[in-house]
Amino acid sequence: MNHYEITKHYKYKTFKEKYFQGIVGLDSVIKDIFAIYALTEINKIKIKQNIPIQKQALNMIFYGNPGTGKTTIARKVAEMFKDINYLSKGHLVEIDRSDLIGEYIGQTSIKTKRILEDAKGGVLFIDEAYSLYNEDYNDFGNEAIDIILKFVEDHHEDFIVILAGYKEKIDVMLHNSKGLNSRFPLKIFFEDYNINELKQIFRYTIKTNGYECSKALEEKFAQYLNQLVHQNSTSLKYNGRFIRNLIEKIIRNHDMKVFLNAYDMRKLMLLDADDFT
Image 1 (cartoon, rainbow, N blue to C red):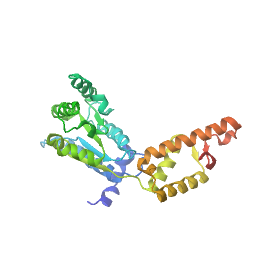
Image 2: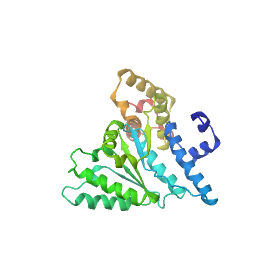
Image 3: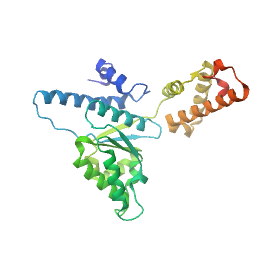
Image 4: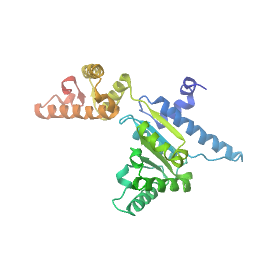
């Protein structure tokens, strides 16, 4: 089946509505995760019919720039695995290098094993995972990788690890660690959001914050985006994170305006163009 046939199927639509409601864009990402979901559901049918199954390692790599939704999707993936009884807890533990690496010999092992035990039964999400790798094997990051690989091997039936970060940097790490590469077979790429998707995220995020967005504000935001595109602004590289920070600033401007000027309380939750400075 091609991409169109899959994403238009009622089972895919039901899946997306249940586990990824409110997610803008990322269709290829959600389709890849749907394939994992379908695999687990078919395995349940095989088990009922006494057909032997080989449980796959579902450790993943999320390639993508900051602000492209990697952490958000990881949280929803953990919830999904809990719901379908693939993971016993289904919680997400988010960490980076500093949570694993110690300052002296022996500390890295203690910190890493503690994190792994806390994450067992759920999903361990390691952001900027490439920072663990160093060509100097004496670096404590390499020690943490070895411990993680051993834990993944021993507990793969109730534990999933997601590595996240820039593709080029993670690929270097994988190329130099064959054991790491073979244990992370699922590689999912997060594209940058396009302009229309950023507009959708803008409207949706305002709504989830409990506010309404005026037509004038939408138009002003659209003009601002076009200006950034024309300038080839680096702000757009931060995608969803950039939008979230922008909305938080708009809300602060709006609330200050209301507070200082006894603004019409009927418009207390309406963000307007003059809030976007």
